[in-house]
Amino acid sequence: MESALKEQRDGESVVDLSTPVGGVEDVYGEDCATEDQCITPWTIAVSSGYNLLRDPRYNKGLAFTERERDAHYLRGLLPPVISTQELQEKKLMQSIRQYDVPLHKYVAMMELEERNERLFYKLLIDNVEELLPIVYTPTVGEACQKYGSIFKRPQGLYISLKEKGRILEVLKNWPERSIQVIVVTDGERILGLGDLGCQGMGIPVGKLALYTALGGVRPSACLPITIDVGTNNEKLLNDEFYIGLRQKRATGQEYYDLLHEFMTAVKQNYGEKILVQFEDFANHNAFELLAKYRTTHLVFNDDIQGTASVVLAGLIASLKLLGGALCDHTFLFLGAGEAGTGIAELIALEISKKTNAPVEETRKRIWLVDSKGLIVSGRKETLQSFKKPWAHEHEPVNNLLDAVKAVKPTVLIGTSGVGRTFTKEVVEAMASMNERPLIMALSNPTSQAECTAEEAYTWSEGRAVFASGSPFPSFEYNEKLYIPGQANNCYIFPGFGFGLVMSGTIRVHDDMLLAASEALASQVTEEHYAKGMIYPPFADIRKISAHIAASVAAKAYELGVATRLPRPADLVKYAESCMYTPNYRSYR
Ligand SMILES: NC(=O)C1=CN([C@@H]2O[C@H](COP(=O)(O)OP(=O)(O)OC[C@H]3O[C@@H](n4cnc5c(N)ncnc54)[C@H](OP(=O)(O)O)[C@@H]3O)[C@@H](O)[C@H]2O)C=CC1
Ligand SMILES: CC(=O)C(=O)O
Ligand SMILES: [Mg+2]
Image 1 (tube, rainbow, N blue to C red):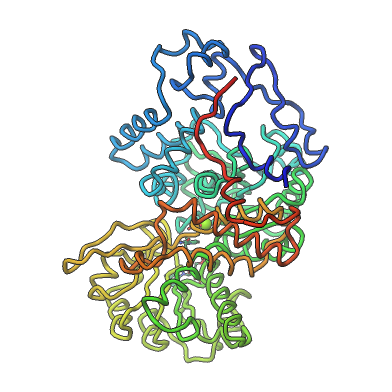
Image 2: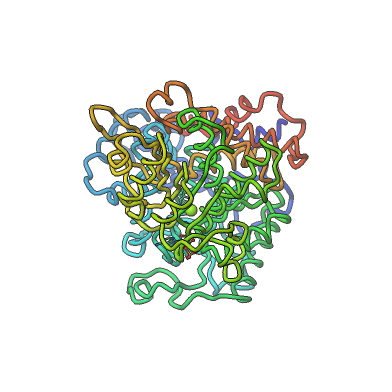
């Protein structure tokens, strides 16, 4: 147990930086799980003086005390005033609020992260509802689109086809060794914005910032990776500022060989317990990669599994408002890709567990529409394999409105990546059939949402229960305030991943996703329901993540895939005690 704590705890009190000027302190040593992991071509220098001020992990800016300024050769390098972290935070929030353009706020936040990591996380944690839309969706989408132009310093690790045969070597170039979570993308389906190639890097960077801020994983244990196999985005290929390989995407064996080399190198370099989160791969690769590696590696596909878990949580919570049990409802999806079929499968599994009915039966209450219309048995031969389980007996139906009329859903979920597809007619049809229709417009960023909160509330005359993937502001209708929920996988993956890491879990199991959903739903209180909410506020996310982590870890122990022994008695307390906090530490 002690070693687990040592790996997770962040040494809140005193850090010894008392090495000579330019001296070298091996900060890894004790965190390495195996001897092998400690062999890298170089060690890290923890600097004093000028270099300390430029080391984001240790820099405190004006908050260095008189004693620290003496001990670490900082005299004269800073103006005389001594600030507090709280005052620095106040000043930075004031400065960020002065920008009108969200992308400018994004750039300011990234610059802060490069300058002073702890202050960056303090801001993000203390102002999560305000800053989440900046470092995450929707602004991160725009940042990826313009990444080539705003790019200043590389973040994360780039592995391109040029590195084929040398991926292990590339991993060893990363300065941190005790990595616990990797978020990797190949940039082919960035949010609902399509193929952004190498510029997708904004997504792993953003997701991992949330791993730390929302879930409590140490920043030094997080590694964002972009695998660059080219892009089919002509605009980027012709953009002189594009930062990636200027070629069409590699496919087939060439693609899978590179991914296999990557997965093998990751395990070799970081061991069995490294968590690899696949993010924003196109569905023609995502399902296959997950199926291939889920039995040999600790992998998690956020778009398929994380999204499923967050939506199921919202559905469980919404029963208080809609009435009935999950098995009494009928679900219709617009979009039958990673998110759509991933959610559908987890709903079917949950109903199956609750009713003891086989999954083949419980799937029958769930219908999906793709770009060609309702998925029905007549289309089975031509469907991709992940759609086949949803090809129920029915006449062909070509569009969403007709599908709503035919299926009569109580719940409508948008996972199409196409904005404004929940038209007035569609929402009105939902409202005509249901006292409280549940409408989820999950596609990101905001421009791709199937409808806005305002549309859902007004077109349903205030009766819809609504949640979206990207945030919408509260909306007043007929003198009543409506608070839309944010059904985004960021409620789940930080706590989910933290639960895996803290318990030393070696494989992800679907039951852990169900446990995470139950844990999230359990955080919705009567007070929230009274406001029409089906998700708890993000302001409580650290507490929520600790509960999710504890539930996931408990399930992992129950299934015998957790290696951190003995099992802590109180997993919530244990999770809380292991979480990274960004308060400054004192330096000897
Ligand atoms: N809120 C959240 O937490 C999350 C949100 N998302 C969002 O969900 C969206 C989809 O992601 P993902 O499932 O991975 O993408 P996929 O590409 O895997 O799936 C998209 C699906 O939408 C269908 N589709 C596309 N256009 C239309 C249309 N005009 N009418 C009907 N169906 C259409 C596609 O049909 P076809 O198969 O015929 O091509 C496909 O089935 C993205 O915007 C993403 O940002 C994703 C993950 C998490
Ligand atoms: C939220 C997310 O993972 C997506 O839109 O892809
Ligand atoms: Mg995603």
